[in-house]
Amino acid sequence: MNFAVSLALGFISIVLINNFVFTKFLGSCPYLGVSGRLDMAFGMGMAVTFVTTLAGAMTWLIDHLFLNGTPLEVTRYVCYILVIAGAVQLVEMYLRKFFPSLYEAFGIFLPLITTNCVILGLCIFLNLWQIDNFLMAVVLSFGAGMGFTMAICIMAGIRENLAMADIPECLQGAPITLITAGLLTLAFMGFAGMIK
Amino acid sequence: MTAWKAFRGGLWDEIPVLRLMLGLCPTMAVTTSVKGGLTMGLSVVFVLICSNVVVSMMRNLLKPHLRIMMFTLTIAAFVTIADMYLKAFQPVMSEKLGAYIPLIIVNCIIICRSEACAAKNGIWVSAVDGLAMGLGFTIVLCFLASIREILSTGCITFSETAVWTVLNPVDKGGWFTPWAAMAMPVGAFITLGLTLGAVNQLTKKKA
Image 1 (cartoon, rainbow over the protein chains, first blue to last red):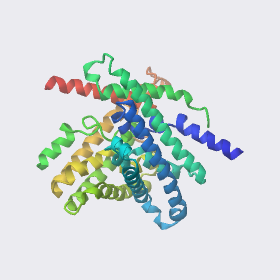
Image 2: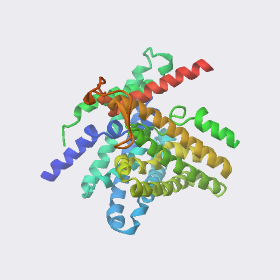
Image 3: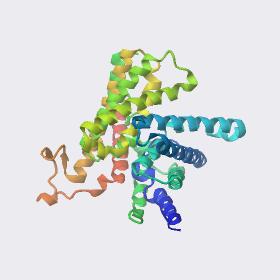
Image 4: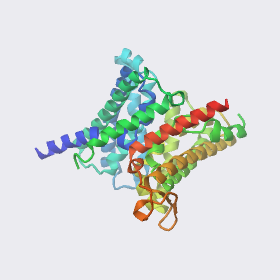
């Protein structure tokens, strides 16, 4: 029972309170680049969530089965990036074979996920926080992906409306997006301290 | 592409962050203090030069579909070196930057330079390009960090003894009330947004 509660708290904490985009700045590039349209933002979020969950689980297993406590620890980052690139490649092949329409829709974003900081960031943070339970690691990975999806969808919604606003010329495009993101962060700071 | 053009490109024409809009995550995360920004910037210079040289050396052997994989693996190797160096010789800084040093691996600037420059040019041009891009990145980081550090604490701190007070803060008997928000994520997003706006405005007038 206690364990289930801690899982739920971990999930809420990583989605709302320690949201990777708002508090750790991870995934800022797609957050600003792909948030132009709501449907694309949602697709990107879903793809990232899937790969994060997969990569988080796999790197945790690799860490605990092979790397921890051995001299191989120095190769940790190389292993992580290999796992992530491999996972993305797998997802890409799977989608192309079985869901060609979805594959078309993702287009260029799929290979780009390899260099999405959310995923590598999550793997590194799982290691830093010393998560020693496999189920917890999976829940946190999934939560990080969901947090990213939520952030990018909120941003896309705002930007669709922002297109109609009268913005000073020099602030159009990226600058106003960054300022909006700053204000959003301010709102999400309200969650801080809710769970230790 | 000549070495001179690459050098100028990195420092002004295509200066990272401000013009290319790449590498935003570390930019915002480490710019709470100038020292953090400088450490991050110099680590990126090291990784960028080394990875550019290596990618340039193997550019004729690359297979198109495995390209990105080779780039990231090369970069990961050099980032591991930088991370171990910082852990050994700058433990305090390494602790503070934490996960952001390994995250240099997925810093888009480095992959972008591998793809756009090193995979097409010789070793000399690639090395110069890496140096210039890295320095440009460092300059931007230090600029943003100095704005944020001055507004959030009133002074720039390099070490316990080397503190440069710009605005005299209230708790040391001065007049300036530090803006706590500047040290938080809000400050990062808004400072970067306004800086970009200012750069847009300045460059528009020249053209």
